[in-house]
Image (tube, rainbow, N blue to C red; front, side, top):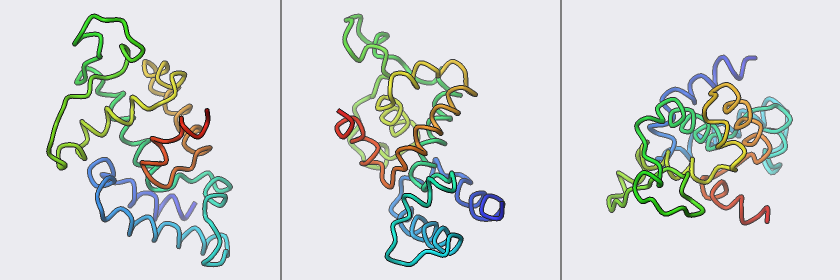
Length: 161
């Protein structure tokens, strides 16, 4: 309870704007330190199992959750690939990812949200019409995966094949 009232509330405030920055690694290290203190674990012990045991999302998983909830709540801001071209491809139901060259734009909420949404399992993507069911399924998926980085999240399909 103390974690969610003091640490989690601070971490999750505005995370969709700063969660993809270089400073997020420092915050993640502090989050792991808090988890180790709560569970009386040593510095060498991995926190991955501790996060799962406490039902707490690691920082990057929390970022993914907040980002995807933003995308689902504002889905009318995004275009689907089928709207751009009428060819029925494997990814026709994915969100359209515009081509950008600036890293600042690529790390922004709009572009990152599309990339993260398109990498979701299709079962969870299908729930995007109902925010409550989507959030519940997504949180379960993120707790199971306990992703420490965005790259781990993007690579989950390769690992689970």
